[in-house]
Length: 269
Length: 257
Image (cartoon, rainbow over all chains, first blue to last red; front, side, top):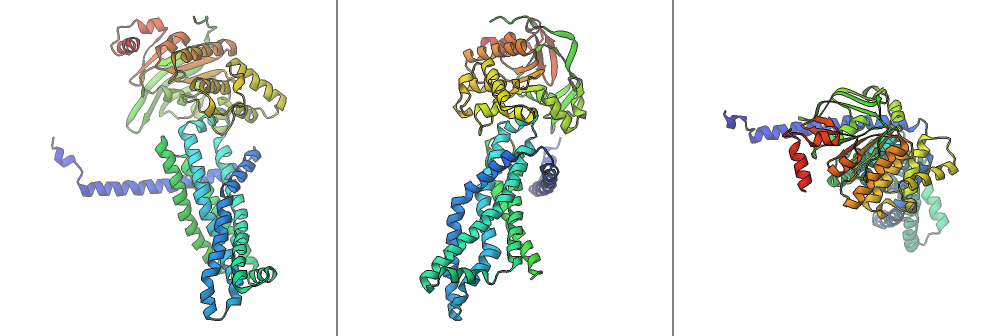
């Protein structure tokens, strides 16, 4: 038998690998769509896991609270500081609170919250479910007559979807505080005047768009983290991959969604 | 300890497998196996690592689907059940996992309560506490009730895992490597517990193991799984005293060890 003729050439190997990767990519997209459909099919049908949902909301909030507080404050403070020279060159220092409010409410608060939550919450969900899969805890739930998808996935996705908008609102106010501190030190403006100018340029659409964005980001972080963990391959390596995949995929999708939502909302202005 | 005589009803088959085959990609793990488990019987499945023993009980509990064949459990064809029907059937089957699969984030009490509160909606707090205490007493670990799984030894984890399945009063027990990774004395304790469960809860069990001591002391019948098929099924003595060259080395090696 001519063994040489059966050995794939490097070009063939490359072609195979590319084709295989493409196959895996489309299979993943198909599987994640099924996963999302399953979530909508099961999340709103009784029995509901209210206790677990409340516990997960608490976990999501507590896990990110400190980091979001610090980051939100720094973002507000630094953004104000960096924007001042540009506005000062036009003699428009008094517009600083308005600029900060538009930047924070429209973009920074939901985006910063989502990125931090992707890192803290998404990775944690991916690792937790991944380790439960590896140690057969998910199988144990299944054989004891419990629906693990409802108990583990639905509660976590709902928790991130509900909690991240709250965290984003909190980030906005902490960012406002950071911005105010910087403005008050440099311009000596009162808190009342700052808040008044902060909210003046904002429209109802800004709040709505920000809220919708946060809800979409929260859902994305939850579903990606759960998908990665729930279907993680066996072994400890799989747990690491699930955590890493949850963060990277969620962050990437958050940016894509940001672009799409900004394009859509700008049509309504 | 000598195994007490089991009360087996040979006219009542609780698990019936016919022509069951399962492959993973190109590797055929099970190649058309037939098996009957009778009511009240402890059946031990012996075989080498990777011979498909664990796959067999995952197929029975519906965690995996067979490529071919039928699996009938308590009169239900597992492959044809809806998700809801499968969940209802699983309540009647206890599954003890190789690594116990205790929920890490919950105490022993919460681990035991978990299946109970989800499957018996009208149960009161008092009844839950009573059942948890009773099942813990049955496995001899009442003192661990408020401990976390990480604080337990390997043997204790196994016993709590068994207790968690017993709390729903299953008719069938599936044990996946119950003595794997345990010291000889703990192995004896687990073997005694398996026999106690058979007597006290009147269960029919499939015990997956490659531990001959466990097989001898718990099994009413032994099924030898080699190359994806049952090469011999019978009492321990019948399987042990064989001239089959595929089976003999397994026993010789185990006893020289």
